[in-house]
Length: 116
Image (spheres, rainbow, N blue to C red):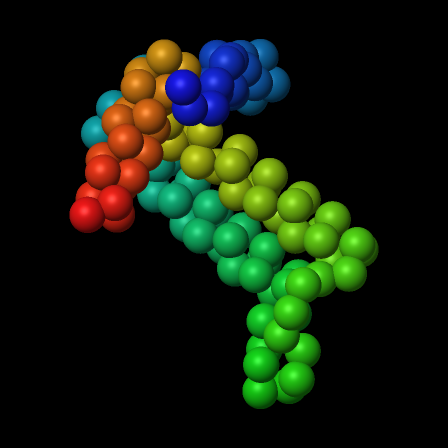
């Protein structure tokens, strides 16, 4: 059995509702599109920020594992990314069970493909 997403999306829905007073799944038309586009852009940006915390620039001789401080900064940026990804899932009305189902299905497909 793969990872449990438990209540990740339920919690994200709760934050959207209680903190922001927003139910993304109820948005329509351009408002829905703008909401989702904003979170895709934000997630993409956060991934870039996470990468910048890692020593990946081999041309500067800095490639390798990060020190503990850089690792922590990278993790924080990845969490920021996950927050925006969860907002997209919520806007698409994906449940935690559905997420787990599709995730496990993808893992099984990839394992089968890569074992050949």
